[in-house]
Length: 296
Image 1: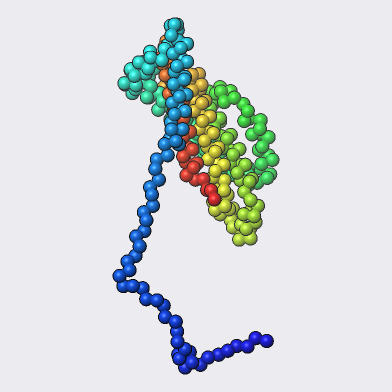
Image 2: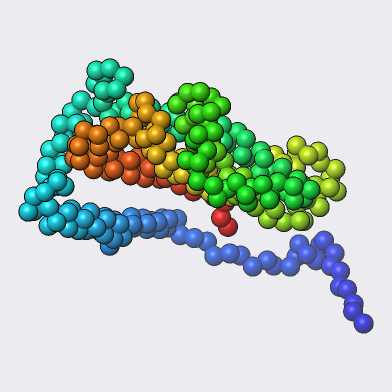
């Protein structure tokens, strides 16, 4: 049996209460120790900088060793001198077939941008539809499996036949080779959304637009950005070959024109330029992907 004991207010007032020890008036707050600033991680910086520099030095060393006896292939020093002269005026224009390397790069990037933009406008919504509706997925998946392995340059004659012009045909080739990674990755991302999310959406009676914009899009975004990154790399890879066949102002046509002039130094410079531009595009899209990556 549990009994409760009650005290009257008078008894409570008469009961002496323990007094807290008074702090001395002269006591001052203790100083808070400043957090030490993290020093520069020289080891990590060294590991990020040294290996790429050693790899580049190894490439140039092997190149110099193989060309030291002369021949048709230029030496690194001769190629560097040609590059300095070439980039001293990259935007000169002496007619439609004689323009600086800067104009050629910009024209190629413009074609890639248009073709890639059209592919994104079509491929990403199509990927959402394929991943969202099983009937559409079963209907379209065999067509994607049939057309995706086709070489992008095999589509170039179709573009020339339909558009009757080299520039739209090159953009068409970029479009058709860029669309597949975005369609496939977006559809896979939608199919991997947890079923519980969709069940909650059904319970809340959300519209299809709300399901796509509030549930599917945030969950699918990493997959979609991966498809975008793969598509840009493929588009920049294909535009060089497409421009070799179609002509006009562009880095691919410039490489072919320099080959016709037997200017091997400029061809090597173009190879490095194509690689650097592709690397910059890759880094930019990886930075965007890291910005939208949601990690616990």
